[in-house]
Image 1 (cartoon, rainbow, N blue to C red):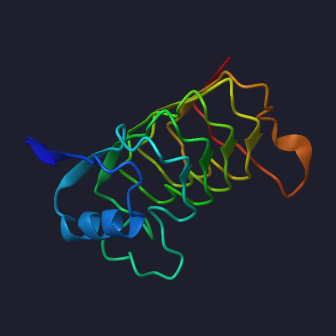
Image 2 (spheres, rainbow, N blue to C red; image 1 turned 135 degrees about the vertical axis):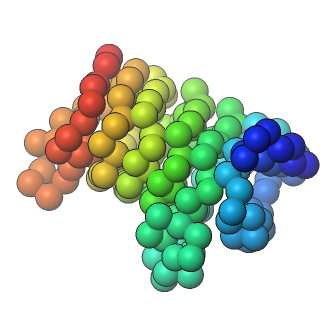
Length: 171
């Protein structure tokens, strides 16, 4: 089901466990319109799969920032999501809005890398693990960290959570 609002359409999925290949195809077919993806009713969805909106093989280059979708501007995740896989939203350069559900426990590597339009992320208290380079290239982001996971980059010389330039960390 989709609803148009100006130059942005809202696509609300009602399947309890959506097929991400079909979601990617729909985003590709509507590359000229901004999409707000509402997955709130996908109540069997426990994981946003690795590379959900990113392809490392360049097959999405025509519609993405590099390999992500440039038309994905917002996403509403269901409260059932526990894990967000590596690269899930990487290079979605116009992504401005995303909720991390209160049950989220793991955020994989490079999940929001190069999401340059993302200005606020709230990390829920439930998060136990945050991967490396999660916010690489996010120069405008404000992070509210409610979890007990440190966002300190000094864990390992090759391990970095935060980009060099970060607007603000709260919490």
